[in-house]
Length: 213
Image (cartoon, rainbow, N blue to C red; front, side, top):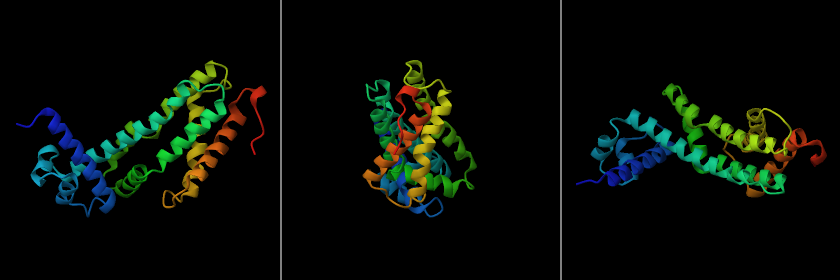
């Protein structure tokens, strides 16, 4: 008799396998047998858990988006207790966010969203629920604490979060050619350093501002 835990584990394996296959082959070329092979289960097992290929695609994208969001949220944890050197903490967080933005799963998810949006317009709901705005909200919460503590100027924390993320991701997308070019870790650190420097020029208390080089 299959236990509840075993059923959940199989479903997770199917969703991970489905995402890998869809990312590799695209929706049109991916077959349910390919997904079963990737997940290490029988083809009927895939249908038992997810009724058809379209349903499988939507759930696989959602599962991947949730996992990616959790990794990005974890990158914000140092801001809970940022220590005395706020610039260094922000640079470290920025570097981790950049690393996680351009890792294999994140790039694969963006490619799938771009390529299959016309076929599945409702996957925009996944972006809304598990996409950048959730990260923005979480970062805004961290920045709000810094504003209340007087470590940043008084500003709408959500606007500040949007600006910091834009300073990080905008240059990354340009330099990586929308994820088609791999950036080295030193380049990611430099992008984070410049982004945080620009952010603090705008939002640090006046006595803490320095010229960004």
